[in-house]
Image (cartoon, rainbow, N blue to C red; front, top):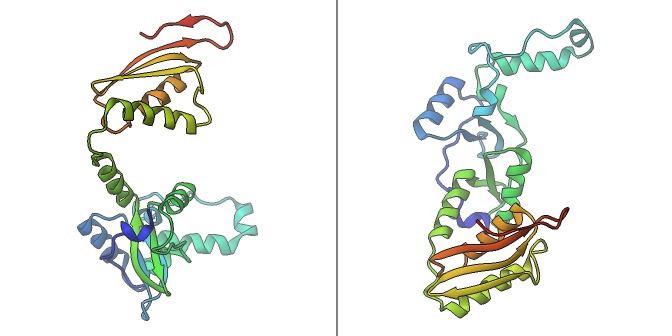
Length: 233
């Protein structure tokens, strides 16, 4: 999937000179936690988010008074902090030069960027113009649709082959220690696993196989250290 397939196109934006009070009201009214900031020519110049408003003198959440050493060595940084905690316009507190993606950006790359930077949303830009926003909620919506997809009614043989093929692809999976039996779309997993995480992952592969109704765990856990075997259940 690519960003353009699920991004939100009807995006609420603000101007740099918009007051923080108006920006906050807009975010509350639309139930969004951030908005792109566009200049008079429609160019993206920043993002204003809930995170930008966490440190505010009005809420008594601004940082404590700096030490005399910091005051002496970094007066410019302290002045910048003062603007952020006391400013009343969007351009005084917004995040400048935001990271962006394009409609053609693979969804996995956008999701990885959001995870790495702890962002909740990314502006989507094409030919220098804002064309949308992709957010965590957009990803959640796409996930819910994928989880609800139907794949027809494969027979028992196809279900077993699917599970074995998925196991073969995963580097962590036992390559010869798992036996898969399918009858009436009910899967029985037998064989040997060497950790609880391995057990859970094998179960998830089976549960995700198209057409599966039930997965029964009959795998035996073998402690790698002692060699002790513990049957399922």
